[in-house]
Length: 135
Ligand SMILES: [Zn+2]
Image (cartoon, rainbow, N blue to C red; front, side):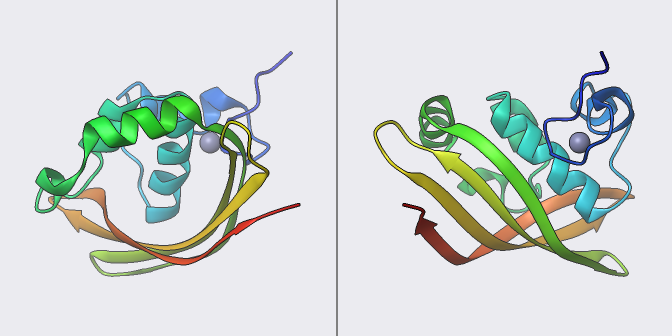
């Protein structure tokens, strides 16, 4: 059985996010980076989250807080709504689903911004469009 990618693309993991997570390849678009960052959250790989955040804003990340949050969360799905690229800037709108212990499933709706520097895409910041608990 082929292992399907954790980003819900329906593609085999090794042909989707795996080469990015292992550092063999660099995501060539904001949406590929976003998908691989979702996988990193599923895998609780905060190093990947740190390394793929824009060097200009990296120092603002609360790594410990992120790690504690990700360790508790059970990620249950990703839906990319739309993505765009304009030169060295990009945007991805998505919904990520997760369950915190003792809670109903949360749907996190976000518009993420990305920036390309020296040919490498980085996550810049995100604006939360909605966060709702399903019942
Ligand atoms: Zn993937």
